[in-house]
Length: 392
Ligand SMILES: Cc1ncc(COP(=O)(O)O)c(C=O)c1O
Image 1 (tube, rainbow, N blue to C red):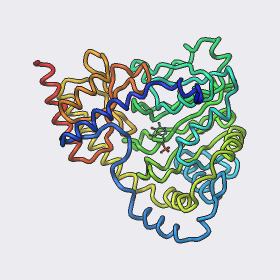
Image 2: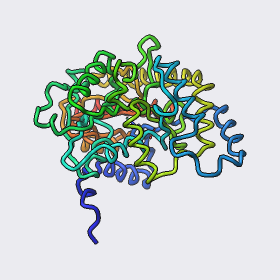
Image 3: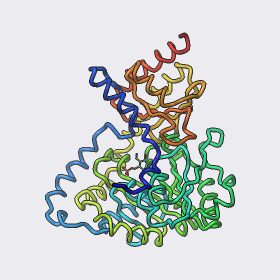
Protein backbone atom coordinates (compact mmCIF):
# COMPACT_ATOMS: atom_id res chain seq x y z
CA UNK A 1 0.00 0.00 0.00
CA UNK A 2 1.32 3.41 -0.85
CA UNK A 3 0.41 5.92 1.84
CA UNK A 4 0.26 9.70 1.48
CA UNK A 5 3.58 10.61 -0.19
CA UNK A 6 3.69 13.88 1.75
CA UNK A 7 4.48 11.80 4.85
CA UNK A 8 7.81 10.95 3.21
CA UNK A 9 8.61 14.67 3.02
CA UNK A 10 8.83 14.96 6.81
CA UNK A 11 12.39 15.27 8.12
CA UNK A 12 14.03 12.34 9.85
CA UNK A 13 12.85 12.20 13.48
CA UNK A 14 16.14 12.94 15.24
CA UNK A 15 14.66 12.88 18.71
CA UNK A 16 14.02 9.18 18.12
CA UNK A 17 17.74 8.41 18.34
CA UNK A 18 18.11 10.24 21.64
CA UNK A 19 14.98 8.52 22.99
CA UNK A 20 16.43 5.13 22.00
CA UNK A 21 19.67 5.91 23.84
CA UNK A 22 17.61 7.00 26.89
CA UNK A 23 15.62 3.72 26.91
CA UNK A 24 18.85 1.77 26.70
CA UNK A 25 20.32 3.55 29.74
CA UNK A 26 17.10 3.07 31.72
CA UNK A 27 17.08 -0.65 30.88
CA UNK A 28 20.62 -0.84 32.31
CA UNK A 29 19.28 0.68 35.55
CA UNK A 30 21.13 3.98 34.99
CA UNK A 31 19.75 7.30 36.19
CA UNK A 32 18.58 9.62 33.42
CA UNK A 33 18.16 13.33 34.11
CA UNK A 34 15.71 14.40 31.41
CA UNK A 35 16.24 18.03 30.39
CA UNK A 36 14.90 17.25 26.93
CA UNK A 37 11.20 17.86 26.57
CA UNK A 38 9.52 21.19 27.45
CA UNK A 39 6.75 19.81 29.64
CA UNK A 40 6.33 21.42 33.09
CA UNK A 41 7.14 18.99 35.90
CA UNK A 42 5.08 20.89 38.49
CA UNK A 43 1.35 20.12 38.95
CA UNK A 44 -1.38 22.66 38.20
CA UNK A 45 -2.56 24.75 41.15
CA UNK A 46 -4.85 23.02 43.65
CA UNK A 47 -7.57 25.58 42.84
CA UNK A 48 -7.61 24.63 39.16
CA UNK A 49 -7.81 20.92 39.97
CA UNK A 50 -10.69 21.51 42.44
CA UNK A 51 -12.49 23.62 39.83
CA UNK A 52 -12.11 20.87 37.22
CA UNK A 53 -13.52 18.33 39.71
CA UNK A 54 -16.62 20.45 40.23
CA UNK A 55 -17.04 21.25 36.51
CA UNK A 56 -16.82 17.60 35.57
CA UNK A 57 -19.87 16.89 37.77
CA UNK A 58 -22.03 19.11 35.54
CA UNK A 59 -23.97 16.89 33.18
CA UNK A 60 -24.34 19.56 30.46
CA UNK A 61 -20.57 19.55 29.85
CA UNK A 62 -20.59 15.91 28.72
CA UNK A 63 -22.34 16.58 25.42
CA UNK A 64 -20.57 17.83 22.27
CA UNK A 65 -19.00 21.22 22.96
CA UNK A 66 -19.42 24.24 20.62
CA UNK A 67 -16.94 23.96 17.71
CA UNK A 68 -15.46 27.41 18.31
CA UNK A 69 -15.21 27.06 22.10
CA UNK A 70 -17.72 27.99 24.79
CA UNK A 71 -18.83 31.63 24.86
CA UNK A 72 -17.55 31.93 28.43
CA UNK A 73 -14.07 30.62 27.57
CA UNK A 74 -13.77 32.99 24.61
CA UNK A 75 -14.93 35.85 26.82
CA UNK A 76 -12.28 34.93 29.44
CA UNK A 77 -9.58 34.82 26.72
CA UNK A 78 -10.67 38.28 25.53
CA UNK A 79 -10.55 39.61 29.13
CA UNK A 80 -7.03 38.15 29.50
CA UNK A 81 -5.83 39.91 26.32
CA UNK A 82 -7.31 43.22 27.41
CA UNK A 83 -5.79 43.00 30.87
CA UNK A 84 -2.39 41.63 29.87
CA UNK A 85 -1.74 43.26 26.47
CA UNK A 86 -4.28 46.10 26.27
CA UNK A 87 -5.71 44.32 23.20
CA UNK A 88 -9.46 44.49 22.75
CA UNK A 89 -11.02 41.40 21.11
CA UNK A 90 -14.58 40.57 20.13
CA UNK A 91 -14.92 37.16 21.83
CA UNK A 92 -17.40 35.95 19.23
CA UNK A 93 -15.51 36.67 16.01
CA UNK A 94 -11.91 37.35 17.09
CA UNK A 95 -11.30 34.39 19.43
CA UNK A 96 -11.33 30.69 18.56
CA UNK A 97 -10.93 27.91 21.14
CA UNK A 98 -8.32 25.25 20.29
CA UNK A 99 -7.52 21.76 21.55
CA UNK A 100 -4.10 23.10 22.57
CA UNK A 101 -2.33 25.70 20.44
CA UNK A 102 -0.53 22.92 18.52
CA UNK A 103 -3.86 21.83 17.06
CA UNK A 104 -4.59 25.28 15.62
CA UNK A 105 -1.03 25.88 14.43
CA UNK A 106 -0.99 22.48 12.70
CA UNK A 107 -4.34 23.02 10.99
CA UNK A 108 -3.71 26.56 9.78
CA UNK A 109 -1.71 25.64 6.63
CA UNK A 110 -4.62 23.44 5.45
CA UNK A 111 -6.98 26.43 5.75
CA UNK A 112 -4.63 28.90 4.04
CA UNK A 113 -2.40 27.29 1.42
CA UNK A 114 -3.05 26.26 -2.18
CA UNK A 115 -0.80 24.08 -4.38
CA UNK A 116 2.44 25.93 -5.19
CA UNK A 117 2.23 28.24 -2.17
CA UNK A 118 5.10 28.75 0.26
CA UNK A 119 5.22 29.16 4.03
CA UNK A 120 7.98 31.29 5.55
CA UNK A 121 9.27 29.28 8.46
CA UNK A 122 11.90 30.26 11.03
CA UNK A 123 14.85 27.91 11.51
CA UNK A 124 15.49 26.74 14.21
CA UNK A 125 11.82 26.37 15.20
CA UNK A 126 9.09 24.27 16.72
CA UNK A 127 8.81 21.62 13.96
CA UNK A 128 4.99 21.80 13.69
CA UNK A 129 5.07 24.92 11.44
CA UNK A 130 7.15 23.53 8.61
CA UNK A 131 6.04 19.92 8.87
CA UNK A 132 2.36 20.69 8.36
CA UNK A 133 3.15 22.88 5.36
CA UNK A 134 4.98 19.86 3.91
CA UNK A 135 1.97 17.65 4.68
CA UNK A 136 -0.29 19.97 2.65
CA UNK A 137 2.06 19.37 -0.30
CA UNK A 138 3.27 22.98 -0.23
CA UNK A 139 6.80 24.35 0.24
CA UNK A 140 8.73 26.02 3.04
CA UNK A 141 11.25 28.81 2.80
CA UNK A 142 13.40 28.66 5.93
CA UNK A 143 14.35 31.99 7.50
CA UNK A 144 17.56 31.59 9.51
CA UNK A 145 17.41 32.83 13.11
CA UNK A 146 20.98 33.90 13.79
CA UNK A 147 22.48 34.68 17.17
CA UNK A 148 24.03 37.89 15.77
CA UNK A 149 20.53 39.08 14.75
CA UNK A 150 19.08 38.36 18.23
CA UNK A 151 17.33 35.31 16.71
CA UNK A 152 15.00 37.49 14.63
CA UNK A 153 14.57 36.66 10.92
CA UNK A 154 15.89 39.13 8.36
CA UNK A 155 12.69 39.85 6.43
CA UNK A 156 14.58 41.91 3.85
CA UNK A 157 16.72 38.89 2.93
CA UNK A 158 13.78 36.81 1.63
CA UNK A 159 14.20 36.54 -2.18
CA UNK A 160 11.49 38.38 -4.15
CA UNK A 161 10.59 35.26 -6.18
CA UNK A 162 9.82 33.46 -2.89
CA UNK A 163 7.88 36.44 -1.56
CA UNK A 164 5.64 36.33 -4.60
CA UNK A 165 4.67 32.73 -3.81
CA UNK A 166 4.42 33.10 -0.01
CA UNK A 167 1.05 33.02 1.71
CA UNK A 168 1.90 32.38 5.34
CA UNK A 169 4.67 33.33 7.76
CA UNK A 170 5.21 31.72 11.14
CA UNK A 171 6.82 33.68 13.95
CA UNK A 172 7.29 32.54 17.53
CA UNK A 173 8.31 34.77 20.43
CA UNK A 174 9.13 34.14 23.21
CA UNK A 175 11.00 31.64 21.09
CA UNK A 176 11.38 27.90 21.35
CA UNK A 177 14.21 26.83 21.20
CA UNK A 178 16.33 30.01 21.52
CA UNK A 179 14.50 31.76 24.38
CA UNK A 180 14.59 35.04 22.42
CA UNK A 181 11.91 37.71 22.84
CA UNK A 182 10.92 39.98 19.94
CA UNK A 183 10.63 43.70 20.66
CA UNK A 184 7.40 45.42 19.62
CA UNK A 185 9.39 47.29 16.94
CA UNK A 186 10.08 43.95 15.17
CA UNK A 187 6.41 42.98 15.41
CA UNK A 188 5.49 46.32 13.81
CA UNK A 189 7.90 45.57 11.00
CA UNK A 190 6.41 42.08 10.58
CA UNK A 191 2.84 43.41 10.37
CA UNK A 192 3.87 46.00 7.81
CA UNK A 193 5.68 43.25 5.85
CA UNK A 194 2.61 41.00 5.95
CA UNK A 195 0.27 43.78 4.82
CA UNK A 196 2.60 44.90 2.02
CA UNK A 197 3.13 41.39 0.64
CA UNK A 198 -0.29 39.86 1.29
CA UNK A 199 1.16 37.31 3.72
CA UNK A 200 -0.75 35.95 6.72
CA UNK A 201 1.24 36.06 9.95
CA UNK A 202 0.78 33.18 12.37
CA UNK A 203 2.25 34.45 15.63
CA UNK A 204 2.90 31.75 18.22
CA UNK A 205 2.82 33.33 21.70
CA UNK A 206 2.50 30.05 23.65
CA UNK A 207 5.21 31.20 26.11
CA UNK A 208 3.83 34.73 26.68
CA UNK A 209 3.57 34.24 30.45
CA UNK A 210 6.92 32.50 31.01
CA UNK A 211 9.12 35.57 31.47
CA UNK A 212 11.57 36.70 34.13
CA UNK A 213 11.40 40.47 34.25
CA UNK A 214 8.05 42.08 35.09
CA UNK A 215 9.27 45.36 33.54
CA UNK A 216 10.01 43.63 30.23
CA UNK A 217 7.01 41.38 29.55
CA UNK A 218 6.76 39.82 26.06
CA UNK A 219 4.26 41.65 23.82
CA UNK A 220 1.42 40.35 21.65
CA UNK A 221 1.55 41.01 17.91
CA UNK A 222 -2.07 42.15 18.23
CA UNK A 223 -0.79 45.25 20.05
CA UNK A 224 0.39 46.49 16.65
CA UNK A 225 -2.06 48.75 14.80
CA UNK A 226 -3.51 46.95 11.79
CA UNK A 227 -2.33 43.51 12.99
CA UNK A 228 -5.86 42.14 13.00
CA UNK A 229 -5.96 42.54 9.21
CA UNK A 230 -3.16 40.01 8.63
CA UNK A 231 -2.31 38.21 11.84
CA UNK A 232 -3.59 35.44 13.99
CA UNK A 233 -1.97 34.85 17.36
CA UNK A 234 -1.85 31.49 19.12
CA UNK A 235 -1.79 31.25 22.89
CA UNK A 236 -2.05 28.35 25.26
CA UNK A 237 -2.96 27.52 28.83
CA UNK A 238 -0.47 24.61 28.75
CA UNK A 239 2.62 26.36 30.05
CA UNK A 240 1.02 29.15 32.09
CA UNK A 241 -0.99 26.73 34.25
CA UNK A 242 1.08 23.51 33.95
CA UNK A 243 -1.75 21.74 32.13
CA UNK A 244 -0.10 20.42 28.95
CA UNK A 245 -2.23 17.27 29.19
CA UNK A 246 -5.55 19.12 29.32
CA UNK A 247 -5.26 20.36 25.71
CA UNK A 248 -6.59 23.88 25.74
CA UNK A 249 -5.49 27.01 23.91
CA UNK A 250 -6.93 29.62 21.60
CA UNK A 251 -6.29 31.71 18.52
CA UNK A 252 -7.08 35.43 18.35
CA UNK A 253 -6.97 38.10 15.69
CA UNK A 254 -8.18 38.33 12.08
CA UNK A 255 -11.89 37.49 11.75
CA UNK A 256 -11.35 36.16 8.23
CA UNK A 257 -8.45 33.85 9.11
CA UNK A 258 -10.31 32.51 12.16
CA UNK A 259 -13.48 31.95 10.12
CA UNK A 260 -11.56 29.82 7.61
CA UNK A 261 -9.68 27.93 10.31
CA UNK A 262 -13.00 27.14 12.01
CA UNK A 263 -14.51 25.98 8.70
CA UNK A 264 -11.66 23.48 8.38
CA UNK A 265 -11.80 22.43 12.04
CA UNK A 266 -15.55 21.74 11.90
CA UNK A 267 -14.69 18.90 9.53
CA UNK A 268 -11.98 17.48 11.77
CA UNK A 269 -12.67 17.93 15.48
CA UNK A 270 -15.53 18.84 17.78
CA UNK A 271 -13.92 21.39 20.05
CA UNK A 272 -12.50 21.49 23.58
CA UNK A 273 -14.19 19.41 26.32
CA UNK A 274 -16.45 21.99 27.99
CA UNK A 275 -15.42 21.06 31.56
CA UNK A 276 -11.83 21.85 30.55
CA UNK A 277 -12.98 25.07 28.84
CA UNK A 278 -14.89 26.15 31.96
CA UNK A 279 -11.83 25.46 34.14
CA UNK A 280 -9.61 27.26 31.64
CA UNK A 281 -11.88 30.32 31.87
CA UNK A 282 -11.69 30.12 35.66
CA UNK A 283 -7.89 29.91 35.48
CA UNK A 284 -7.57 32.91 33.15
CA UNK A 285 -9.79 34.98 35.45
CA UNK A 286 -8.71 33.79 38.90
CA UNK A 287 -5.35 32.00 38.82
CA UNK A 288 -2.95 34.12 36.77
CA UNK A 289 -1.41 35.35 40.00
CA UNK A 290 -0.23 31.75 40.66
CA UNK A 291 2.08 31.94 37.62
CA UNK A 292 4.42 34.21 39.59
CA UNK A 293 5.57 31.31 41.79
CA UNK A 294 6.39 29.30 38.64
CA UNK A 295 8.40 32.19 37.23
CA UNK A 296 10.42 32.34 40.45
CA UNK A 297 11.08 28.61 40.28
CA UNK A 298 12.20 28.74 36.63
CA UNK A 299 14.36 31.79 37.42
CA UNK A 300 16.14 29.85 40.18
CA UNK A 301 16.65 26.91 37.83
CA UNK A 302 17.75 29.17 34.98
CA UNK A 303 20.39 30.82 37.15
CA UNK A 304 21.61 27.48 38.51
CA UNK A 305 22.04 26.02 35.01
CA UNK A 306 23.56 29.23 33.60
CA UNK A 307 26.15 29.21 36.40
CA UNK A 308 26.98 25.55 35.68
CA UNK A 309 27.41 26.18 31.94
CA UNK A 310 29.63 29.17 32.66
CA UNK A 311 31.69 27.11 35.09
CA UNK A 312 32.02 24.52 32.32
CA UNK A 313 33.51 27.25 30.11
CA UNK A 314 30.53 27.71 27.78
CA UNK A 315 29.22 31.01 26.53
CA UNK A 316 25.59 31.38 27.55
CA UNK A 317 23.19 34.28 27.53
CA UNK A 318 20.41 33.54 30.04
CA UNK A 319 17.00 33.88 28.35
CA UNK A 320 14.60 36.63 29.44
CA UNK A 321 11.63 34.34 28.69
CA UNK A 322 10.72 30.64 28.15
CA UNK A 323 12.12 27.77 30.19
CA UNK A 324 14.80 26.93 27.61
CA UNK A 325 18.54 27.56 27.51
CA UNK A 326 20.03 27.59 23.99
CA UNK A 327 23.74 27.08 23.91
CA UNK A 328 26.49 26.71 21.33
CA UNK A 329 28.57 23.54 21.53
CA UNK A 330 32.16 24.73 21.97
CA UNK A 331 33.76 24.32 18.56
CA UNK A 332 30.33 23.65 17.00
CA UNK A 333 29.84 20.24 15.39
CA UNK A 334 27.32 17.44 15.25
CA UNK A 335 24.70 18.18 17.91
CA UNK A 336 23.13 14.71 17.75
CA UNK A 337 26.47 12.97 18.37
CA UNK A 338 27.24 15.47 21.13
CA UNK A 339 23.93 14.90 22.93
CA UNK A 340 24.28 11.11 22.61
CA UNK A 341 27.78 11.25 24.09
CA UNK A 342 26.62 13.46 26.98
CA UNK A 343 23.72 11.11 27.67
CA UNK A 344 25.82 7.94 27.56
CA UNK A 345 28.62 9.36 29.74
CA UNK A 346 26.53 11.27 32.29
CA UNK A 347 22.85 10.31 32.04
CA UNK A 348 21.95 13.94 31.20
CA UNK A 349 19.45 14.16 28.34
CA UNK A 350 19.30 17.41 26.34
CA UNK A 351 17.98 18.17 22.86
CA UNK A 352 20.24 18.45 19.78
CA UNK A 353 19.79 21.80 18.06
CA UNK A 354 19.55 20.21 14.61
CA UNK A 355 16.20 18.70 15.68
CA UNK A 356 14.79 22.24 15.25
CA UNK A 357 16.24 22.75 11.78
CA UNK A 358 19.57 22.91 9.98
CA UNK A 359 20.42 26.33 11.44
CA UNK A 360 20.13 24.78 14.89
CA UNK A 361 23.10 22.51 14.15
CA UNK A 362 26.03 23.15 16.50
CA UNK A 363 23.69 24.09 19.38
CA UNK A 364 21.81 22.27 22.12
CA UNK A 365 18.67 23.09 24.11
CA UNK A 366 18.24 22.54 27.83
CA UNK A 367 14.71 22.52 29.25
CA UNK A 368 14.24 23.63 32.87
CA UNK A 369 11.05 21.60 33.30
CA UNK A 370 12.51 18.81 35.39
CA UNK A 371 12.54 18.30 39.17
CA UNK A 372 15.10 20.41 41.07
CA UNK A 373 17.08 17.39 42.27
CA UNK A 374 17.53 16.18 38.66
CA UNK A 375 18.50 19.65 37.47
CA UNK A 376 21.04 20.06 40.29
CA UNK A 377 22.56 16.63 39.58
CA UNK A 378 22.61 17.39 35.85
CA UNK A 379 24.44 20.67 36.48
CA UNK A 380 27.18 18.85 38.39
CA UNK A 381 27.49 16.21 35.64
CA UNK A 382 27.65 18.84 32.88
CA UNK A 383 30.53 20.67 34.61
CA UNK A 384 32.43 17.38 35.07
CA UNK A 385 31.77 16.37 31.43
CA UNK A 386 33.18 19.60 29.99
CA UNK A 387 36.13 19.62 32.39
CA UNK A 388 37.05 16.10 31.23
CA UNK A 389 36.52 17.12 27.61
CA UNK A 390 38.80 20.14 28.02
CA UNK A 391 41.56 18.21 29.77
CA UNK A 392 41.09 14.94 27.88
C1 LIG B 1 6.59 27.09 20.41
C2 LIG B 1 5.46 26.21 20.80
N1 LIG B 1 4.24 26.48 20.34
C3 LIG B 1 3.18 25.72 20.65
C4 LIG B 1 3.33 24.61 21.45
C5 LIG B 1 2.12 23.74 21.69
O1 LIG B 1 1.57 23.87 22.95
P1 LIG B 1 0.12 23.37 23.30
O2 LIG B 1 -0.40 22.60 22.12
O3 LIG B 1 0.26 22.52 24.50
O4 LIG B 1 -0.71 24.60 23.53
C6 LIG B 1 4.57 24.26 21.96
C7 LIG B 1 4.75 23.08 22.80
O5 LIG B 1 5.77 22.73 23.27
C8 LIG B 1 5.67 25.10 21.63
O6 LIG B 1 6.90 24.84 22.08
